[in-house]
Length: 389
Image (tube, rainbow, N blue to C red):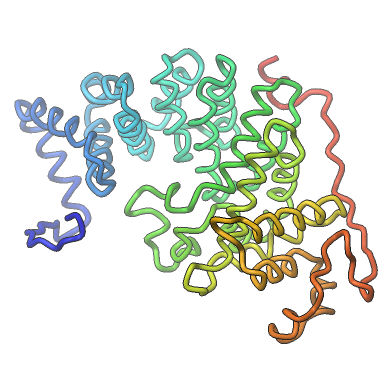
């Protein structure tokens, strides 16, 4: 506690089936206990420790499965109408747990769908968070439709929570579908949809894996999971290292954010944060493998390389956090084409002595190559227009 160890007594179940059995016995056969248990769970909803409130929300979800009407009336609805984000997240997690049971899945889907369309702002906020778990709608397509409704309503009042939960979906197997929808949003004719896509793109670069995997029993705690040792990585770089097939769509989204007037400044700051995460303060490797995958896709055109050159030089001259010259050179070489980088490969100490061939000062022995970025035609009618007008 506060950096100090204190003795504590830990109690745990001997088998994985016992927690559910105890909850069932308590809820079904000891009705007078329900009221104090509900009050206790509401108190735990305010606990700042993830390992406390998350497990309390899971327990609340299991109790709602035993009696959904009672659980909805006493737990879900009051918490989903609260004024604190912690309680709204608790309500969303409780619904996600209930949705894990086939008997209640459709009921949860209908409830979240209703909240996303005509709920109060706090209910829509809770719905967005529940959708971020990936179980609150029948399909990923429906999940993204609901998040879009929430994110664009009232001129983007809830775009922050909607975009965050779009990024949460990227740890799921359907990440490619999520990225494709983000691209559709950025090319929508209506600005609220564009803002949702751009906000999600910037969050993709700034949000860490640990911020998405809040559950202490989630993917990040599985030693066999590729996310396990990348908790402090930005999601974009973790995805680039784990799923290289997603690099191109991520690079296209970042290219759009960097070349859109109202998002280019924050997108440039996000790119700087990605570059600074290559190595840790002690000099050990951090996200460099992810940057090695992503940077070449971000620097395929002359304009892109000029921008990277300018950013690296700005980082080197930063009076508060100057980027070492050797690190800047290494990042530049990560960004050049793999074929070109292979030609220049050599011992690290030799490369440091080479002239840094920025985009405006090409290396004399390197032929210029053109890799045109794929066209991004604006569609006649996007998916949202076809469905919602």
